Length: 231
Length: 231
DNA sequence: CGCTGGATTGAGGCGGTTCAATTCGCGTGG
DNA sequence: CCACGCGAATTGAACCGCCTCAATCCAGCG
Image (cartoon, rainbow over all chains, first blue to last red; front, side, top):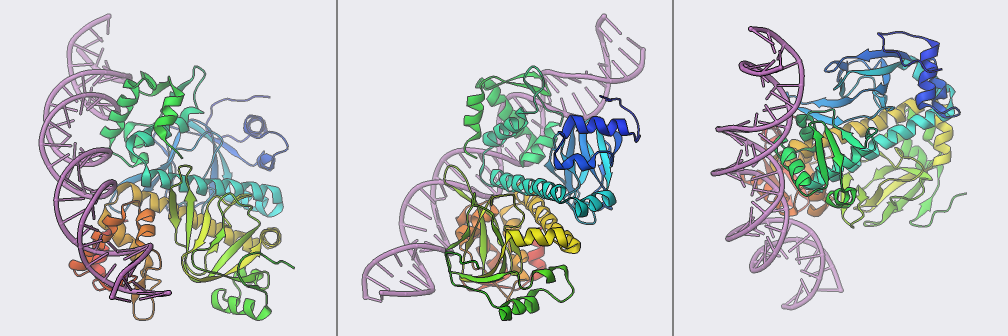
């Protein structure tokens, strides 16, 4: 039943079934998507879709890590989100994407043509409602992040970031940070040096330990939640 | 049929026609809403709906000013948006509102029971698409504001705020600020004193003039756009 | 006229930025 | 296998913008 092969753009019923089993428990509204998607792989650093580009498809992240980026006219970039495995990308959109998605590690996605999604939206009421919920949640997270960016200190931001990633931790409980410090800094609205210093403080206080540059072990979760402050 | 608790609530065909004439040019998807809404008035300072409350209805702002607020567990508040006349409130939501809406001046709204909107969503494809666009725009604005809160100085924030409100200006071209400085400061993620000082700087530089506490005249729009910096 | 809440103005301190210098991590090639 | 090199991360020091605290001003109103 499981077909986790890595391959270039292929379309097969078996693979969409795999997707269904992996992410879509039978009976959920997303069932209707099974069979509609095309599996694709993207290399680290490559663009999945571009801001301003035609939103002719949306994607589901099956494996790997991605950043959503908004460009500014002066050339600077704003990292808006790090979607997690299972998330939809580029659905909550108008006729064109208003942010771009870039792979920060090799990753696999399932691509759904917009036309098909639109059809399903019209046909399947519960599917439509489910996607509306997803979008609402996106907006909710955005509002939450506004609070963070408006009122939180460096410690609170970094602690919040780590705890947000904690549930993506791998087997031995270590948090994996696939993104660079630059990305983190940009995402949290602070300088890269401050991110580094703050991680150092958390390390020194015994809340976390660093197994490698991109792997962080939570030692004292309570302390980390304390550092995060109230949400 | 429906008799809500707060405010004067009347339902009349004439008024919905007025609504239709005022905001919904014939032929647009929102036409289907005509006749479905109930007109209501809310006094300044009153709550329209509460965060965490049952999202049994959504609203359309017909007249007056409103702020959207998110509460934090430590009691602090985050002003997330100042919707403009014609905007939908509380639609981009799950089963319960994840922010509250408060009137900052006496205002009139049209209330649409969620049940009716859901029905229309299922029946009318173009209406559904229109509401999806509205939601997408909300998310887009939220992302834009993240950029602002992450990378912008006090001057840039205030200038951005004024220019954002400039198209709501009244007849003689003056911008009306119905919200308090405290609200503005909270919304822009800065201290109230800094808002005041920054307005003073813009006034001294000749970009704006103050006709009264809540009325600001744009003198040099180019200078103001310069102060806003790149978006 | 005095009261009250919001807005303004001033002085001082702190957190985070900026700039600069190392150090670290890791792939590459000798 | 180790030396090398480059980009990323860390560390240090000085600076600056915004916040905080406190005093004062102002408008609206009984």
